[in-house]
Image (cartoon, rainbow, N blue to C red; front, side, top):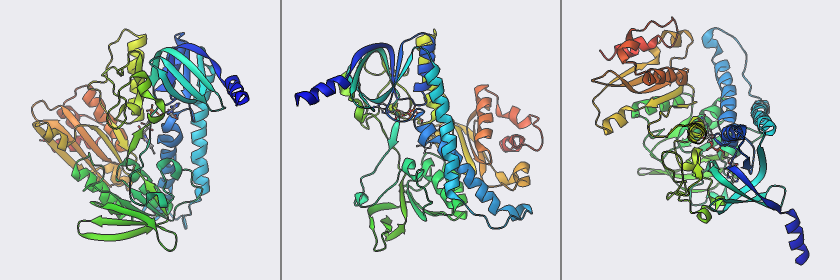
Length: 474
Ligand SMILES: Cc1cc2nc3c(=O)[nH]c(=O)nc-3n(C[C@H](O)[C@H](O)[C@H](O)COP(=O)(O)OP(=O)(O)OC[C@H]3O[C@@H](n4cnc5c(N)ncnc54)[C@H](O)[C@@H]3O)c2cc1C
């Protein structure tokens, strides 16, 4: 016993003090570490897994790489529509995965290199937990422990996929977005719980690779926060591709049938039935990575779901401790996490009084077609009692879309009826994210819709469709 204690003491490193300590090398943690250390702050970065966090390793980068392969398969199958003959399209899934892995590694290595070469910056591999308001204890990945103290502590620990409590779930080998992307073979029939953006991106991707896909959503539409006409249009597009979408559907029990397949007992209204599939993906949201942090030891408050509570300057209830990115609760996007970094940087290194209040939250759902979103939806404008004008236009009216045979989707804009200012947009169409960004820039510059209606854009671009779209408002 005494010998064991001696060994463990030998593995424990002495306490060290830092100006700044960042927990999690996520989308905010890495740039913040580089910015602070560049200014000469003695900075420690603690990471229990891969550098780069979820976006690089199991979020944006791998999904968008896989989606690109799925799109090629889809377009190759449509080649005859363009007058091109290709022969039978085959998906070499191990090669698809290899391509994705290579891109992820390339991004991850880039981050590792930038951290390695930074002066005043120490990367510590291990899991951090609070030992006191300015003290962190780290269970090192290589064994042993290390205690650090710091003047400023930043929590950037992100979230993990949420696992629901459903009767029988523990009897089947369910997947999350992370483990699904590690499969070496394609699922034959993928069952997806959840009609949010992650469920939709994976559903369409695997359907295009050749899996059968059934998507179960308990609400009455996909993408619950979007307008019904926009979500309905996307549902129609996905169903036309062969995805079986079940709305208003609850899963009451999960088990296996006699062939070993995953079996879901589902209920929709008075109708109860079972659906079976080879694999089950849980895509019903996320839960904050705060469990391991022992936030109580530092008096840091969380909300009822465990997200760290912050004010508009990202300060927690404990002076000197900040929370950035997904761990503070939505909006959970990489660009928001990165903007959190900019706010902290401006407030600590600049003279600024930066705040998260009122910042725009654009986002893109990377289905095909994409859904680019900025500002208010029509539903949100109505809830706020605003006097608005709304224009909607099918992508089938857009010359560029017709020429490229990508006419799926619609464009929708919400405009202040008095001032003509753009309040929000939903672009469900080819390159919807890019077109949405143009409208975001117009909003930033407070360009009234009449100027976009009358602007000269080059022909035939997607941009010129804004003339027709805003022309609907007259
Ligand atoms: C499948 C999927 C697709 C996505 N696609 C998009 C997209 O297209 N666009 C977009 O904007 N966003 C997307 N996201 C969301 C995006 O990944 C996140 O919003 C973003 O990564 C959040 O960054 P973050 O700074 O909060 O921390 P993360 O990037 O989540 O990093 C947190 C880090 O903290 C580490 N950590 C946690 N606890 C501890 C601890 N106790 N000690 C030490 N280290 C710890 C974790 O290992 C992790 O590396 C996607 C997410 C998923 C899951």
